[in-house]
Length: 146
Image (cartoon, rainbow, N blue to C red; front, side, top):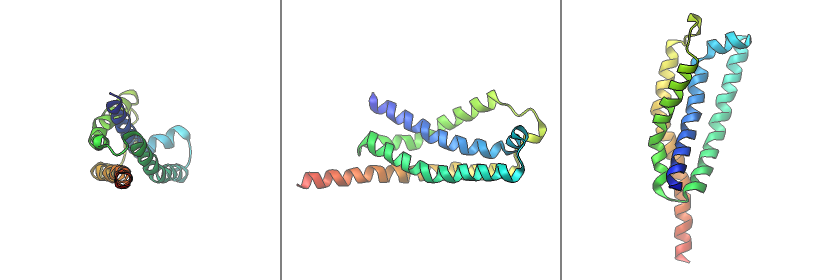
């Protein structure tokens, strides 16, 4: 039961990281309007958030996979189960904060970028999970040989 809870928590965390990235991209014009910042300032803040997330999340994900699953293959389920959580998060956000002002709609190129993210994200997660699990297997093999 504890493993199932950990798989779901990790899946939700994977999804939340991608959800933040998607929503920042989709709501750029809304952020301009609500904050009153200049366009360059908003773009710089969003780029900084993406950069910090791109650097920090692999370490966090690696640490969690290594600590929670300790070489068990159950962590690989998270590579699949993040998708329903992303859909749920986007649905809830779109329901709570609908686009009512016509100027807040995202540009068409944003959809292509998000499609690219959705295609590559499972491979990104698979590599992180594999590295987090593989190190534990190597340690177990060394211990068993002694």
